Image 1 (tube, rainbow, N blue to C red):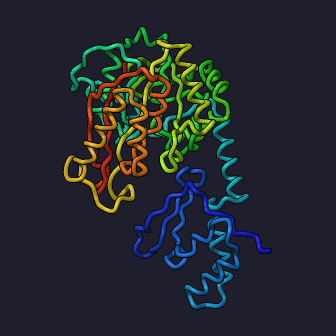
Image 2: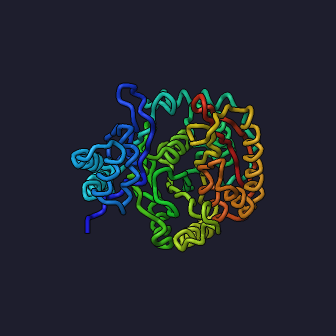
Image 3: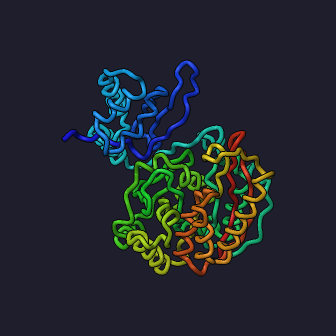
Length: 409
C-alpha cells in the first residue's frame, strides 16, 4: 500500500503573492521555525489540500493530470513535495529536525532577549524609551487611586495603543508604589498567539529588554508546574516570538525598575470550547491549571498583582471578514456595543455570561484576549472591574482592532 503524503503543518500562513510576475499563494511559517517562504503557482495551489496525511503521491499525480491534461506529472508532484518538505512546511522528519534545532537553540539561552522593539513599539535605547514613556504618561490625568489587584492592558503596538496602555498602567502606579513593588510579583497573563490550545505556557527564563533584566519568580513557577501538571508547558521558544507579554514587561520596568519580579504566562486559546461548546475546564488540563492558579492566589494573595495583556475584537478583511471595517463608524459601532456588553460582564464578575457571549456564533468578534480574561476571572472570582478606556485602531485600511484599559479590585 502506498505511503500517504505527509500533511501540511497547521501553523502556516497563506496569502496571495504580491508579485505580479510570480502569481500564486505565498506560504510562510507563523511560528518561525522555518524562515523560508514559498510561492506556489496557481495550478499547484489547487492540489495543496491533498497534503492531509491520507492521500498518496499517486493521488497527487492523478489530480495534476486532471488539472493539466498531461499524463507525465510525476516530476511536478515530486518537486512540489520536495519543496514543501525542504521549507519545513510538512509534518515529516525534516520538520522535526528543524524544530528540534530551534528549540535546542532557545533552551541553551539563560535569558529571553526582547524581539519587538522598534518604531511602532518602543525604542531600543533605554534613555529614549524613558523619555517617550515620560511624554505619554504626562499627557494622561492620574486616575483616582484604588486598591487594584489586576489591570487589563492592550498588547497592540504601544505607539498605536498608548492611550489605553497609559490609562491602565497609570491606574496601577496609583495603587502600587515603587517601594511596594519590590515585595510583589506581577503575574502576566498574555494571549498566546503561537502556543498550544488549552495549555498554559510558562518559562523560567528572565526577560531582557532595553531597560534591563526582569527576573522570573521561579518559586511561584515551580508551584504552578507542580500543581498544574500537563496543562502547564515550557514554551520558551514561543515567548521569544510573543509580544503580548514583552510589552507588559517594558511598562512594568518603566514604573518599577528593571528588576521587577514577574511570572510570565501565555494563555492558549480555548477554541475547542468556543467551537464545540461546554466550559474550557471541561478539558482536564485546563481544569487542573485553573485550580493551580486559584491555589497560588489563595496562598500568596496581596503579594501578587495580575497583568492581562489582551486585545479585543479583530474585524475586517485582514481577519477573514468579507467586508472591510473602519474605526468608530459603520459596523464598528455595533462591534463596540457588543464589546461593551462583554466588558460589562467582566466588570461584574459574570464569567459564565461573558463566556456565553464569546461562544455565541463561535466568536465572530474574534476576541484574542478571551482566554486570559476567562483564566483571570476563574482564578479570582471575587474580582470586580472598571473600564478606564476603550479604543479602535485602524491597523490597515480595511481592518480594525479594539482594545481598552481596565482595572480590577
